[in-house]
Length: 469
Image (cartoon, rainbow, N blue to C red):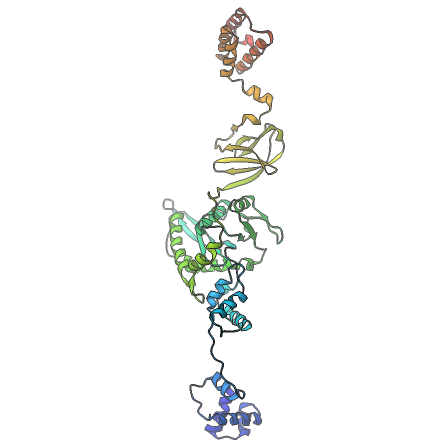
């Protein structure tokens, strides 16, 4: 159109010949003559009316015979169409049928699809992927940190920023943690699911060491504690492929938004505790989720309430309790060690490899997937917690010879036997219980010993405690 405008200007304003116009503009004289003829037919010379832009001028000059401008057709609400496509089993064909139901004179199916593709190419990159409702929660730690100051010592600690975002609605959760270690990784997941009020079908994470033990494209190894969390909530873990950030592009974009809209606003503030920092983050996260998204005409919270929330699985009755898993070999004394304390397991498993699940309150021992022992956790180091049923029968019989039981057995024999056992118990010898047990076995073997025998042994014990040893 620029050359046509120049042809008309040179022809009517300057009055030059077609040969000069051809050399100036760089088109043939035949084309120049045709442009001038078409302009004359529709009554256009120079200057061209200002209301005629290039599109209108082209339509007037080159419209075929009998051409009528197309009548305008109602356009669909593309934001609504884009949101509905994230629902399970919703297709463009179904949405087109609903559109034609409201507008019988609307666009055909193929044109409807073309117009949607054109519209989708114009929205922001973070919304180009299509995710089913309630399907995936993308999680990662942001690269930036926030300093937290100790009010007493002035020590500065860098708080890590955990980010979780729903795939369909972009609903975002942010929390500060002091590390990326397993306890903080698991704790952030528990808080994120509580924040959502439901459980997605999959957790998509990076290959963080706290979550993934074996990096593999096809068979990644997931940390046992992380897998335990997924089992508790009834979801699954889908680690991203190594060096494939597009597998978790949703959270990569969310991290960028968090850094620009939350961390940037906190850059000039000083925080003296992690709790104080998380309160400030939560306020800004609520603002972010309530903020209207351009091109879509709705906020993240609105999309979450209408799309993701109804599709989420319910939370279990109790939140996941952090537990660490480790492998241990049962010692010859049928105990396993957990942080300096020893816990018993059935004696038949001596020298077998077992799995230990340690929570803040309990210690559970598993063998081939079956729980074989459970103990209350103890913080006393170098001590043993033993369940009698775990002991061999001989050990159990020996362990049950307590002073009270020895005296109870002596009472059934006679008063002199009681006196003798009491005299044995008053000695400081480590073998007093063994001596008393020997006396009881003697009594069972020959019947009740004579009272004079017991009195004689008791007198000898008083005079010489080593006599019964």
